Length: 256
Image (cartoon, rainbow, N blue to C red; front, side, top):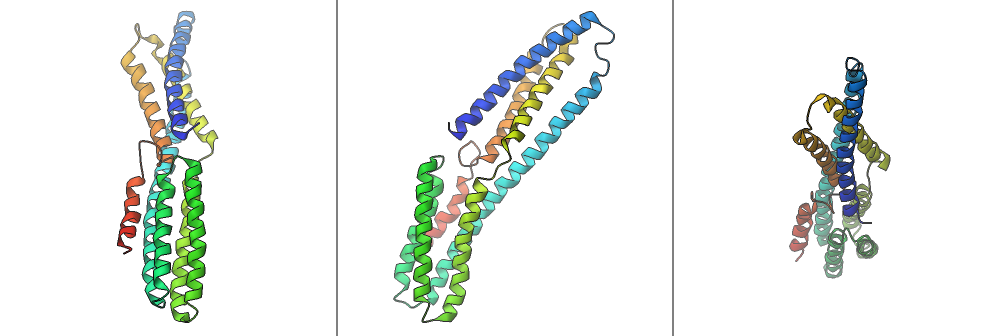
């Protein structure tokens, strides 16, 4: 099952569950009021405050974490573009006859790096492109070592830049796969359902149902959870990070 479909199903199930639990809470509250009109709300304020407060904290922490990871992923794209651009420029330090081959390898390498993220959410295709870029890293490293033997000073400047260019690949790959444990999102969903039950119970004292409040409460919480999940997967959802890839594309255009 794709990530997009999983997120949509989770959000849809959460919205439906919240509406059902609001109705269940309302009916429980109506029975409680009928059995004990004066004591039906005794002690409930403390419970509601604790659960809704915990829900607020969970949303704050998960949203903050997702937004932070989103920004980190975006910043790493810029860092990779800078690393590749710097390493490419330092190829000019090598002997003139060695530069054309290495520059062509750089062009192919950057094309492969761009293809990795263009293939997402097709994971097998993205892995193939990643494997190709890693193979090209080896060729570039070997070629730079062989070409730099005649000029140790050039090698001392070029190799650290190549090392940074290669390291950022691993960093970006790991960062893309870094997400909170699934139990965090499960707890977020359970808290949303618990809040719906309590909200329905609190609305039991009204004579008629308020669809605006019921639908609004469920929709706002569901949308908030969906945005958090979307931020966690910026390559496949509505919130996209792909526009920042233009920085890498610009570097590729500069490689004449």
